[in-house]
Amino acid sequence: SRTVLNAPIHLAVELTTYGFALTTFLPLAMVANEDREISFDLVKGRLSAKAAKILKALYSAVGSAVILVIFWSAAKKFLWAYQVGDYIPSSPLLYTAVPWGAIALGLLLYALEQARQVFLLIRSAFAPANS
Image (cartoon, rainbow, N blue to C red):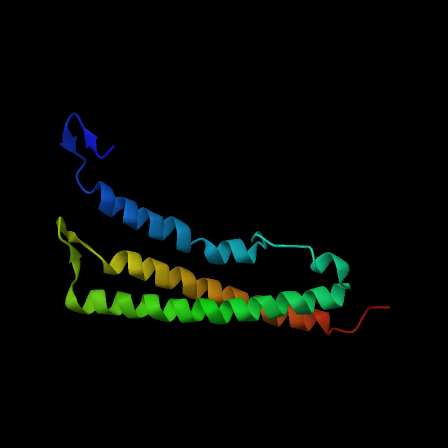
């Protein structure tokens, strides 16, 4: 309910929007770094270790490219909101640039982490085997 004692909770929707953007997008890079993403292992289980690493590198590279496209869109919205001073009508102190910035930052960090993982996976897949 958006009301308490028949009075609206001031800024409830706006703060929820901020919280959603911050808690959803900022931890993405940490989740990727800890390799805690949701994965589907049906194909991976049937591959050799080297082929599995190459497949994961391919998925990470494609995922990173898609995330960078989404990042670019969010960054453009952030820059527009910041430049025009767009704010939420019910509260001029809450600018729409904040959630767009959080989304853009989270996506950028995630894409960079994915790119780092691609590099590490390819390096480990083609590293000489220790005797």
